Length: 230
Image (cartoon, rainbow, N blue to C red; front, side, top):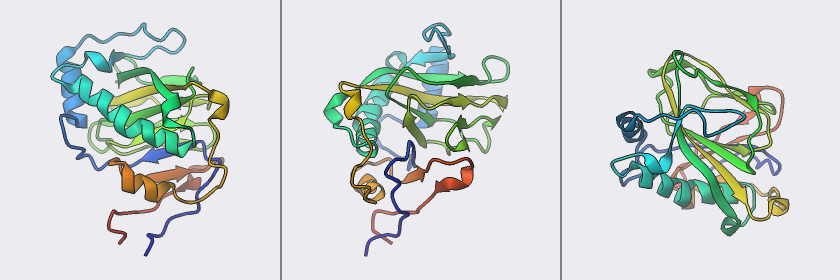
């Protein structure tokens, strides 16, 4: 039997990839944080209009930089391609970095739109113990607070905000994705509800939580889908 799932929102602009936190290899959220703090050369001037306190993924030591790039290329990029119905070969990274938010430094990032076709951020910290506040406010849906290891994916031209952290430290892996042919980056024209099943089948990040357009976070739809279909 097919697992139960909500009707696919064919024009949804926001998706969340649920992570198993056990993706194998050299990557894990905690390893990424440790590598960033070991490197400890945080920059604040790479993004002119909306600067972040960050480290380029390729600069992360101990093989974590390569692991981050592999994760983004092999798992997240195909997920973006499928979610927004754009050929994978047209997508490429404009930027990939690890950002840090804390009350004593940069607590958040004000309302803005990204200069990218698609954007994503993976939460590396545990929101239950590592920080208070945070989350991402997105104009169509309100405040979205993913769990550790989850990846929030959205169109770059959506107004959004990195909500301030009031305590602790929030680390995220952020990617800006471009398309060789942005005009062809359309939503699923068939409107079929296959995103969840295909994501579970093909992408180790696991489940997708579809976030419809609306005014309240109640429009977030969650389905528990497991690989054995139970």
